[in-house]
Image (cartoon, rainbow, N blue to C red; front, top):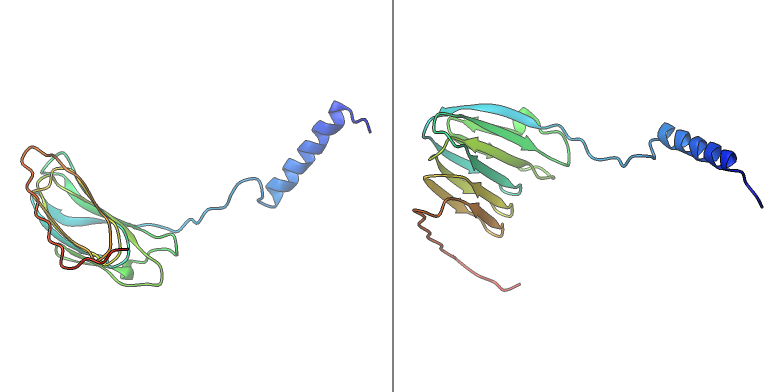
Length: 160
């Protein structure tokens, strides 16, 4: 069977139009809406963040006078303002069937305390103190090492 080039081009164009019409040409991704909030603390501040199952990323800015902010995302559903409680410098995420991931931007040399059960915790930048408590979550730190002091305490250990 012989097909001309013009027929093949016309067939490909027709297939592309059908794919675009039915949304088959591009993969669909979950587009849950994020929740963002400016935090009232600025300057050298102290934050407590409690998120049992979601990831927590704390990022210190390069300046001590920068404002603090919070961004919450979820691949499950949209994050509602009622899912996050901000009281002073304490941020608490309520438990849901799907996780909520937080990114908290803080001024340079801030103090943070993060409490998690299973979520990963990232601590990035020049922080005065980062106190991280987790049951099974991974802790990742990308901090200056010039005056770094570490204290690790394992309360229990079970091989996997």
